[in-house]
Amino acid sequence: MKRTSWWAVGAVVAVVVAVAASPAAAQPANDEWQVLLTPYVMGAAMSGETTLRGVTVDVDVSASDIFSNLQFGAMGLVVARKGNWGFGADTIWMALGTTVRETNVDFNQGAFAFYGLRRLGPAADVTFGLRINTLQGKFTFKGPDVSRSQNKTWVDPIVGVTLRTAADRRVQLRVYTEVGGFGAGSDFAWQLFPTGSLRLTDKTSLELGYRWLDLDYATGDGNEQFRYDVLSQGPVAGITFRF
Image 1: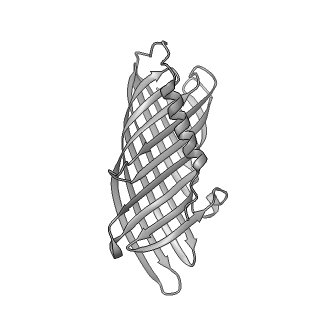
Image 2: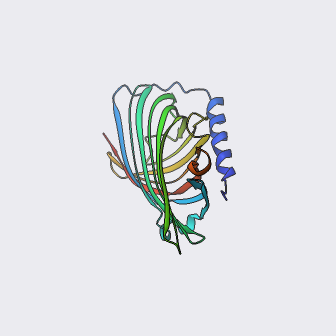
Image 3: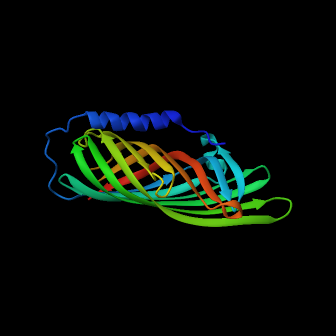
């Protein structure tokens, strides 16, 4: 069964409350366009429950099994901003697979987020937009060579907050938090993404972090039921390019 990271959910709530309670600083925003492009790689673990065409399988792969259970992913982030406003896109694609009780479980998970952002102050932004989720699921039962597969795509509205330390420092810390779905797509979705950045040159930085993305989506009944109630998590590493 799904092992929910309640401490991570609590961190999301705490960050949002802290930002809402903090007054915006008077430091002016930069009036020139600033663009950040960050390609990432990610190792991903899964925990939760999936249902394909009415057949339910528990998924439980710990973070320590990331690289030994076909858990791998790639992602890319681009953010463009000018003054107090900006926009961005965040692309995630993860090939997730494991074996549960003589059943091979394979999921390709894509999450493509598009959002606007509003500067709250030099240390915080609020984001708002949507994420397109797509899942390609397949169960293969050992013994009798039988498989069941099902693909689904849906859209989640999302809102989030980013907190960060000063950008002019060589080492910068950031925390991105997000909630979404609200029954419009997923019943509920949340994300927590802390990162540390080490400036290598004026134009590049090394990025290291850890990402949690939790989706709870269900549709259909009986033999046509599809459900994806899974927490995907894992370390990330990448390079940021500034333009």
